[in-house]
Image 1 (cartoon, one colour):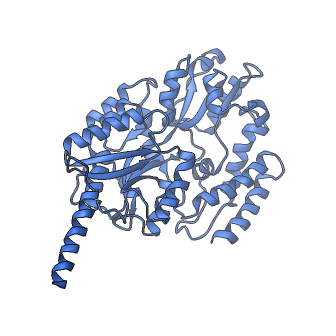
Image 2: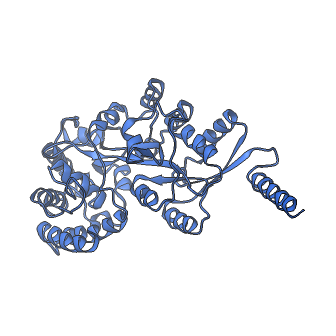
Length: 410
């Protein structure tokens, strides 16, 4: 009798757990937490989920969207409390930290279709040879320029072959148009620094990523060039000249000739700019290099619906249907780059020269893959800020950053 009672209890528990993971229609339920649809792409994500549920009528996706500023704080709390959603979004900067703490389930790519996914993006979310995330979109950075200001200054438009020298020459010509008009803007912070030093033959760390190399000759030279744009030639506005404006706002006001920023700006600029603008591959110094940003969907290692979660992740990542919805919405670059997706993406203008986005893929570089990268980025930025403020020279700033960051993180 006791054995029979135990057996009945076990059956009841299994039934209860299974029932709790299904809705009234008997569909498996998975919870999905994301940040990237917040502020304009909620309808696009809803259309993707509707398409997935139509294709998989036995699965119901419950979506929760948080703003980026709160997202990773909330996610860390939930993961630590064993309350992680079944599937959630991670950016490339935070991916390794969650993988290292065992929060992510390995995704068996032999059971799903990832044949259309751009290889670089797929590899970015691997640990060793194992896949722990499936990319959904990626983006790079290009030079966006105001054609009207170039015409007014009587200078030729940028080309993909430009270096910082040509950029500076054009920026000075545009700056000469008036006190409130500026030539070029690129932020001076860690994400811009790691890419720019690569353009000059430098790097933040050695090849094995075991030691920081922040104060190399190449890095000091590159930082000096960045700062000179503000403090010497003043083709880039300083904080006082911006007066609380962001560089996007300055560009949209028609008072900035060029801006180095991500392709995620396209939809905003297309909607709000009242002048002609286009893009080219970002200028290099000694060589070309541009950012690689990517977001992925991951499956929680604690999820009871890992198979359904992986199927949903694969749909967002590798299906042409989801990719076309993303391309139509001008929502970064889909990772499933079929011919139809590429053609659709290029057809959404402005910018007219969408080919520059694909040309830039030859020059992608990633930040160091470090669990505490966000902390390192904040620490380095504090030294970069002091160099901009002329409290330290570029060499002094990087010498001090090297000493502090090496002692704290190595």
